[in-house]
Every structure is written in structure tokens, then in C-alpha cells.
Length: 150
Image (tube, rainbow, N blue to C red; front, top):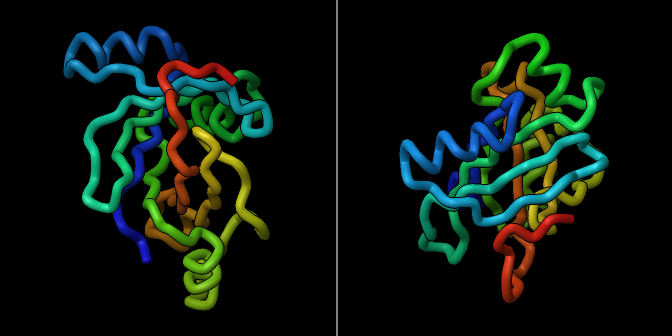
């Protein structure tokens, strides 16, 4: 069962400038940063709030580390802006299977590792009214995520 909006992914050309905009304009601070080599992105998670299920909601700012990454290609075509929405779930495998049975294409056969050690998969935007949709099962919390660069 989907329990919350986990994050909104925003593609940007310059992560540092975009982080500074969100900090200066809205007061959001960086909770976690990392480089995901598999997905070809450098990212910053800005925590917006805690949620009733023990999780949190974030803005995920994404800068491509290479032009051929999914985010790099998306930026080249669309420019900066909202890239995807992610819903939190306790069971990404089960929810992805249930959604697949409803005729929605799930982009990964098996969930992959996402931000902060989460397990993720994506749903095809053409099956979700034009919205790239991510399903996220958060990793168990560790002592400190603040600005941990992987």
C-alpha cells in the first residue's frame, strides 16, 4: 500500500545553484547527498517534513553526471523542472507486482538501490498519464544521513 509522497524529483543543470535557491528561498536544508553511478546522477535530498508512517517527504534535486543518463537525456529534451513523483511503500516488490497486474508497465524487473539505500522501481509515464512515477521502500534509518557522499 502506498503511504505517502516520498519525494518529488527535480532535474537541474547545476546542483549547487539549485540547492542554494531552495535554501535561500524556502529555508530547506540538505539532508543527504550522494552520487548514484548506476543512474548517472549527483543528488541532494532536501527534507520537507516527517510523515505519520515514520518516513519523510523530500525534494530530490538531480544533476546528471553524464549526458547519456536518463536525467541527462530528459534535461536535454525538457530543460529543468519536475522529473518524477515518488510514492513511499513498505513493500516495493509487492506493490510493483500488484500495479503490473493492473496493466501498468514497471520499468525494472527487480527493484534497484536508490537514494539513502532505498529500494526503488519506476512506472512507465505513458501508463501514468504522462508522469514518471517511482515506488520507494526506504532503508532502515541509520545514525546520520546528513550530507553523506557515496
